[in-house]
Length: 302
Image 1 (cartoon, rainbow, N blue to C red):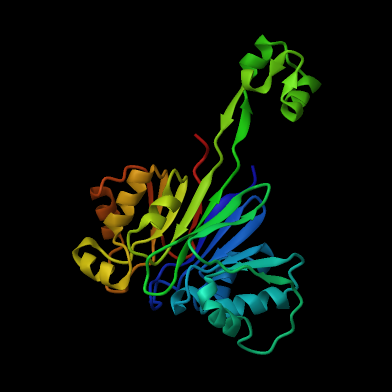
Image 2 (cartoon, rainbow, N blue to C red):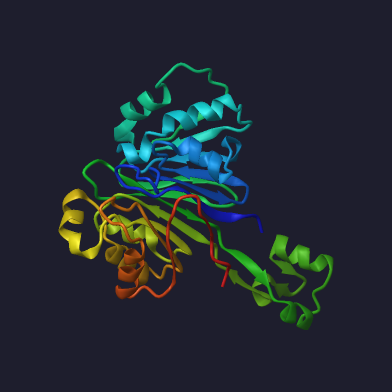
């Protein structure tokens, strides 16, 4: 199977620190690359992480606060400078069109690549369907309009060798069974089982809301902000953010397999505290406290 992994470019909230760049995340998925929330410095972080402009097919911005979008200008210009040979789509809140326009044309450059603007509005919904995934968005709860994103791979079928042998299905008949759903008197359902498609969600600045739970439901990997620790929950609610414990409870209740916490406030010095509070909140799956330039593979299929 092609590579499916998250490349973390930056993990800081609001301002970069000595050890954490502004936000930036690239999801590599079967030969495509989706760049989420390119904050300031993203172009350089891509270079350090070994991600090229040619790897990018979609730009997905959750909202237009600077730590999630100031790097967009440099990334768009780099895509054109490098003459990326395929079209690139940009998804972002429609209410922030004026900000997208300013960032896209922040300075003079030569446009060589087709960049399609595909803004999100209302409560969100399906944004794109490809053979490898469906991309959708859901509205979140933040002082400015914000959306989270989710990729869902179509379900497939897993052939069961024992049942194929039992029914005498071999060679070209297997291919015909897959294509046509039947080979002679044997149906596909009799010799295979559903192979559940993988699911990935990206949730940034938000309070707890219906959109968070809808995006997280049944995900193999959930990348989610955990700006604050539990002692500062009131601040989190006031400013439209989550704590590590809140994020972990969402993941626990949604059946998430791998939880990636990120978007940390500069007020905290010890990243281990985020993991401790996530575990204390009852999340028992795979847990990663993100750090800049790390690569996190999606979990293998069950």
